[in-house]
Amino acid sequence: MPGAADHHQLARRTAGFLALLVAALITLATGCTTSPPSFTPVPPAAGASLPPPRTQPGPATPAQQRAAVAAARHFAHRLLTYTHRAPEQLAPSVRLRGLITHRYAAALAPRDRIDPTLATTLSEVSSVRITSARIAADAPGDSDTQYVLLTCTQKLTLDERTEHIELIWSLRLLRYGATWRVDEVSQAG
Image 1 (spheres, one colour):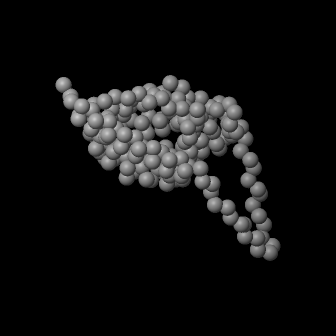
Image 2: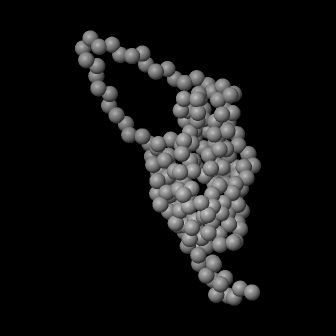
Image 3: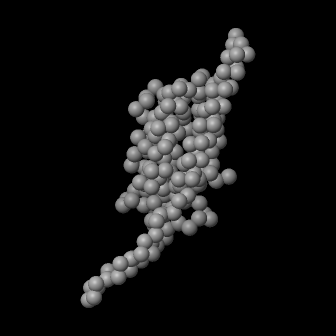
């Protein structure tokens, strides 16, 4: 039967993990809200013709919306499914390769150093069950940008103690050719 000292040690380690997790999430959230730098276009040389202005993207087709939702679901599965027993897969950029934009990869970069250390130290095992994923009706979406509302339950085991964490995310996805990539994730509720 575990003693009081064991319970206190587990509580301190869990509290330490949660503090590091909160710090990582704050770093992630602040990195996701920056806007791209602005630029001043150079005037064309005399006599040069400008290409026609780019037209605004049209509305997304139902197939594009389904593809964006599928990409958001795939992203959540890859981000929240891992085990300390596969240390080569603990860095988020490894698990999310090909599913995120370069901008979001840069925002996740600090987690590539933090997540593997935490996961191995705390013997983490994580899995996810997605309960819903749909296009956000109140967000501006078009054939190049879609917003997906996703709810899921993460089952996280730390040092043989299991927690269930309910997550509600709003994901912005950008179209890359025929595929969609996650560009931003924020809490939605």
